Figure 1 (cartoon, rainbow, N blue to C red):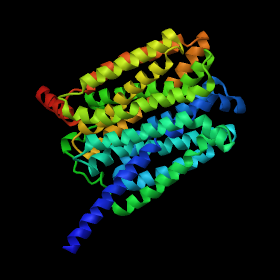
Figure 2 (cartoon, rainbow, N blue to C red):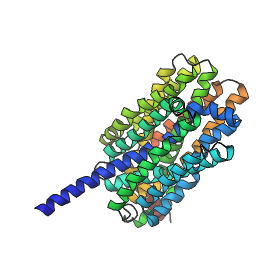
Figure 3 (cartoon, helix red, strand yellow):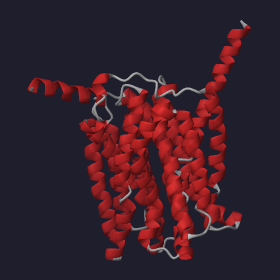
Figure 4 (cartoon, rainbow, N blue to C red):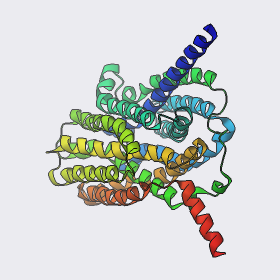
Length: 414
């Protein structure tokens, strides 16, 4: 009897640690990037950066995601999920430190290291959730997304204030998040004790799905949907404060505009995966996401800063829906945790490669025209593409089924 109670207690502790680990890792996957936008003008002024160089501070992590995501999914089967995430958190902490050294080369190198650390968490966590919480995928995907967006909201809204309170300016604003990454590393070390074996890599693989996911139309739909929602999100994060300041909006309020957008995402990212699991397909949620993006961007295009808070909320809802659907697609469009990691790696490699060009194009269109209209047109066009690929990704068809259907068709043709 006592032995049974000990087992139950141990299991409860294991679940608590796993949930805490998910929450803390998620909290580190956006805040280091969103904290930069409100103080970007200070960084530009102190380091003498051009608009393109400033855009790279946001784009570099995205390009790292693009290059490294597929490699991360390959290494996961050999190194183990928990081992990789722990190392990633340490790399992230180092990158956050390098970013505040105060030189141009250090801030770019720090951005690269931050991208590397976040990349591993982005890729590994959907498979980890599918493996450890296989019966609560929708719920835990919601928890994961809420933690990510709450920390991102706080990072945006408090960025300028943190710089003032620490008296370190922009360095304090973006450097303080190193504390959170070290706390996450400590909790993940405890998680590592509970899960010494790779919970993802040991999963059996169906031989019919050994073919590259690059051959699957469904995998490409998910990947491009992932990329387009990321492109819109990171353009807004990187440039909306600067765009608002240029039309006379108070600088001290720009961080809260981003923060409100992030806060609008929180209830959506929690509820959307749960609702999505109850629907025959997720097309209504994709349509709603695209509609919110469109209306929000049109408000910025037509009315500049007049309805900025409404636009911010709508863009936040659209982004929350799209992002949570992406994470959910990794799990529900695959048949094993290993394949969830694989499509996560592919989608984020292709998706962030696409998204990485977004802030640079957005900023360059402003330089070309000396107003932000063309930049907003660019986001509207991206939204149309997002709806198209999202509708296809929302079809109730797994990647494995897609590949098996192609394999059967090839056999019949032969």
